[in-house]
Image (cartoon, rainbow, N blue to C red):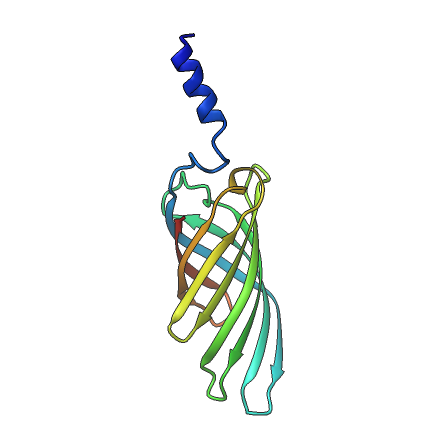
Length: 153
């Protein structure tokens, strides 16, 4: 191997992890089913919902690292006395078919939500970023489809 090629190979291998990672743009849906819901009445007439969900991610690009990850989520939502959402915060963990894991946290208010990935294992160990999310459709039994977008940093 020519010396210049060997030096280039060594330089690439010495780059910090993630320095040569490709930018990721992704979007899709998470279909979720409620597993448990606890309602706490507040003195102001509002309430707090503590909800646990299970779901699956369906990325628009089926080659995305996020496609077909299964998720478990726990969100706490504060509702005003008229039933409108005031604020919602939560956490999800996701596992793909290879056994690689990542976490995500989300925050939403009446104007919409944002989420961020928490790096995990394998292909998710160096991913950083997030994006907007919001409910695309909800059914009376609590099932929902959540629309999300992701941009890496």
